[in-house]
Amino acid sequence: MVKPERLPYGVAFKTVRKFKGLENEVVLVVDVQYEHLARPEGQRLLYTAASRAKNVLAIFLTDPPPDTRQQKFKTEWLSSLSLSENLTVQKGLEAQLRHERYS
Image 1 (tube, rainbow, N blue to C red):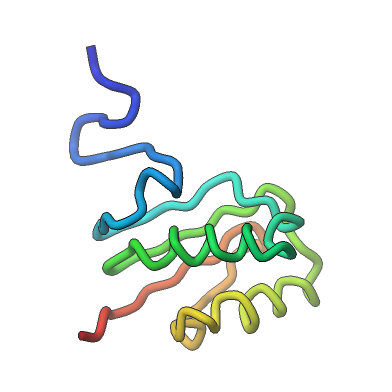
Image 2 (image 1 turned 180 degrees about the vertical axis):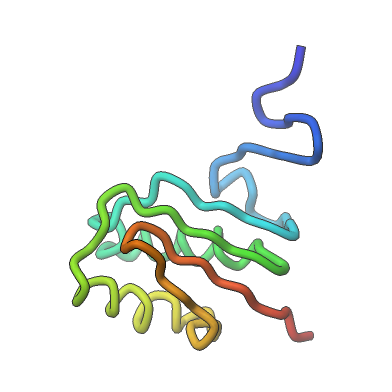
């Protein structure tokens, strides 16, 4: 039996809190509710999740924001990661970000 947190091929399903301190080449953040991003706790969780990605980060919003809110999401919340210049928003539902980690 496969544990629910770990599937074959290196795929892991974890909450943001359980993934804290870990990294992965590709991170998919799913079920992000835009309304939660307006609160500091939601912003902290998104930052934690986003900063776990080494190469590719995809954020899937459950409730796509209108265009003006989409721009705010890109410029305000993701700019705190210093990666928003590489951000592309597709179909108004997901933000995909590729970055290089600088040390």
